[in-house]
Amino acid sequence: MDVTPTPAPEVTVLFPCLNEERTIAECVRRARAALDGAGLRGEVLVADNGSTDASVALAEEAGARVVPVRGRGYGRALRAGLDAAAGAFIVFMDADLSYDPAYAPEFAEALRGGAEFVMGSRMRGKIDPGAMPPSHRWFGTPALTLLARALFHVPVSDINCGLRGVRREALGRLDLHSDGMEFASEMILKAAHHRLRFAEIPIHFHCDQRGREPHLRSFRDGWRHLQLMLHYAPLWLFFLPGLLLAAGGLGAILAGFSLLPPVPAVLGGLAGLISVVLGLQILLLGLTAQDRVKHPRWHDDTTLFRIVTSCRRLIMLENGVLVSLSTFALGLAVLAAALFRAGAGDAAAPPTQTVMDTLRLAFLGAALGIAGVQLFFTCAFLGLFGRKSSSDTEALLPPPGGDAGAE
Image 1 (tube, rainbow, N blue to C red):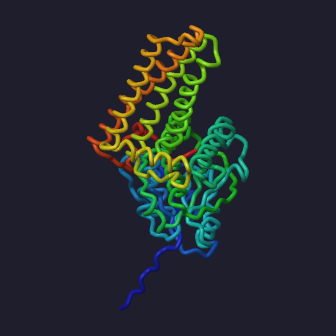
Image 2: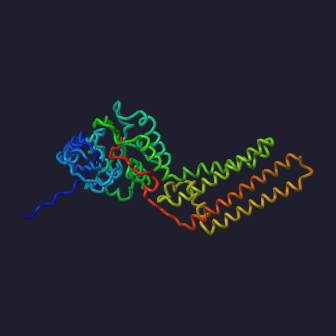
Image 3: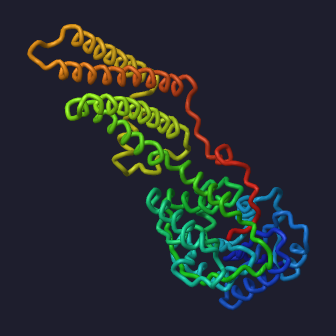
């Protein structure tokens, strides 16, 4: 007798779970009711992060398919759940009833309508009193969202919202690796990087119904989010501060000895020399970081990126040796000119002016000489030890320690 195969689900509602026995069954029931009520062919999937209570049994009893996940971590649980999901559209949220599973059909409809990545927004929706700590609502989430919008052009108003939807076929492009809470940022930054089509839905954020402390640790997990963002933004972390320091220092050396009295001019020249050295070192660190990040095209449509790309070509081993030795030789020549001017003097110029001109040349020569040495060893490092592109953010970030569940 022929058996008609069960059609694959269109929608998967996914819950990461770690000891959620107070809420997981209700989450599953509400998700199942939402799918059935909307006439959607779907499944409810629970990615269990090693629960030691009755969470697994309760989830299965309520009608969920449970996937065991080895190792702890919010990102680890979600990655396993996303891999196991059978639906073409995946909607996921925390298992604490702070997000209403009744939103699942609306998110699925947005995905069906052409969006590839759907974010909930608590900021544009409603937040129950006590549902979000004031530090998260008024500082942490707005600050991280503003940073993500400024650096990565992420088109959302709430980067930390844990209610999201994604097309299964888009997941393979994201190459997700984070194990901890920073998974939330990695996912959205890479979605923006790969230019997925975004949609945002205002949602109602409720109080956590578990009756215990959340898995989220504000400072630790916020710091991990920030680390991951900076890891993917070497242009802005290194190049803008480096350029400003180096340019400001060079200006102080060239102009200070003409515009300031002797003592302030010397102090300004010293500060300028330090600024040039620090600025160049930061720039070279940025070039090294840019060479070792897997996605060097985060900002490939910016003028700054094109300048950085040209600079990277200049400090490859063969070119870099020539540039560094030329810079060092120029510094020695300027220092020699300073010594000659100090010895020869200028009968027509005031003695103070002669001293100031000599000091200007000395500081400028010293800056060029030091820059030549810095350039030489940086290009030697990049050329001799090769490039290393890594998508594994674990090498950068501290051990996750974060459990399943966001805010």
